[in-house]
Amino acid sequence: MTRCAALILAGGAGSRLGADIPKQYLLLQGVPILRHTLNIFLDHPDIEIIKVVIGADDRPFYEKAIGDLALNQPVIGGASRQDSARIGLEAMVKDDPDYVLIHDAARPFVDPTIIDRVLAALKSSPAAIPGIAVFDTLKSSTGVPPVVNDTLARANLWRAQTPQGFLYSNILNAYRSYKGPNLTDDSAIAEFAGLPVTLVAGREDNFKITTADDMRRAEYMTQNTIGDFRVGNGFDVHAFGDGNHVVLCGVRIDHTQGLIGHSDADVAMHAITDALLGAISGGDIGTHFPPSEKRWKDATSSVFLKHAADMVSKRGGIISNVDVTIICERPKVAPHRNAMQKSLAQILTINSDRVSVKATTTEKMGSTGRGECIAAQASAAVRFG
Ligand code: MG
Image (cartoon, rainbow, N blue to C red):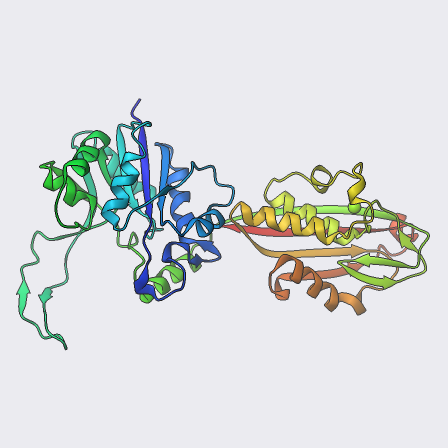
């Protein structure tokens, strides 16, 4: 069995973008660029080992970006891309893979077909990189303001992309023995060592996010992909008992009775919590907050909802919307609807136009119709990638 590793270089400062955090941690559709990139490699069936090289000061960004992705400890990189790649390769000595793919974290649109082509080429070549033939006419200029000095022959020119693939031992040795000025990609190190490098087809979409224009293009591209939507539903009922108020969606409503429950019995919030957990296949409210545990006695249910929302975001999901229907004859929900939406939106940290609260009766039929209880059912949609 051939063992393939991916080395993701995420150590750059990304100064050209002018953001105050390194560009690989900027968000695209709410998900850090690095995580978009990692998802592609984590999902690829041939990649067995993944190592990420990060900047020495970037660990908090990194931890937040990867959430609960199953990854080994990151490697702290060096001063230049070249140093970081070498340090990353050295960190794989124990793993000793057959192939290594070295990839820029800031190319989140690499697709599995590019990875496939690079890996296929490694069967007959010690090095393979994706590239795109240059079709624009190339000018050279040194002046400010720029004036054309020369027109370059574009025939035979390619733009190099990543992932660049190598036989691991070959590229490790090439890096170890290279002494010279900084080169801008790994292929150049291989070429310097005399290794033949095969070119395979890259894709225009596999661009490196470098400038603000690139960021806009990346945002546009992610907006136009539907992504992976997950939907969950939740249902809950609490019986009426003694009391003078109920709590629904975090809003206290004076009433002639209260709802019986271990916590504050916020039936609507419980249904939404279960809908969110359902969307990520994360169990149900009872798994996370067993009624047998004393500490949840009289708890405000926002704790449960917040926990579910945190689980969604740790798994890389974004809450797209939630929708709850409260089923009861009394109290009247309509006067409190806006306050409920606001309260939920605040807990979920989403806009209130993504939160819907509805109410219905059961026409005096059944247990809700007889005023014995309040029921609630909810749906939630969560987007990944
Ligand atoms: Mg409940």
